Length: 184
Image 1: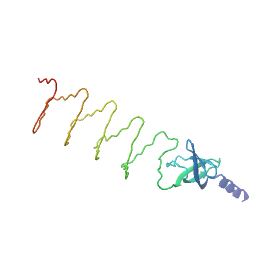
Image 2: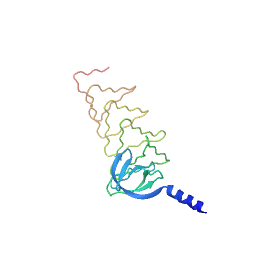
Image 3: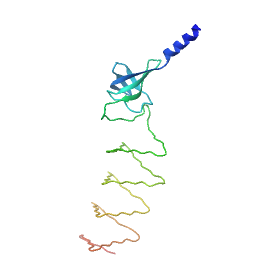
Image 4: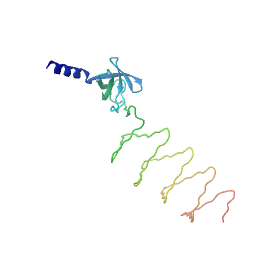
């Protein structure tokens, strides 16, 4: 009987202990200094990156290591960063994904950004759309239809329009202005 209770006390002493703490400062590499001087790593399951001032749920392991499990509270108006400690990439896999913002959304990458709708439709709708490319802008489509009130195109070097059949029509005036005009 004595041995059984001794085992349970040992097991209890070695089990993880939960507590709360406040993040004091970032030490780098998902390591944080707490308000009581201890340091803790961000747990892989803690997807919200802690910030100084955050109240967090902490676990103390049997080996005396500490992990931030969850961010419990943060001052209103502060941003949040979604990050998985130790992971090189993040993938969201779900039948439907909806990302909504009441103000702005920004997608940024140091290298490539790819948006693909393999069998569906890609729709862009905005009051204004701006595109720019430092090197090349290529459009490839089986059909291209555009409807605008005004279409201005300025080519500094060469403008070439080519087709098996090319039709240029104007309701009132068609004007060609150049130093030399070659037809045929």
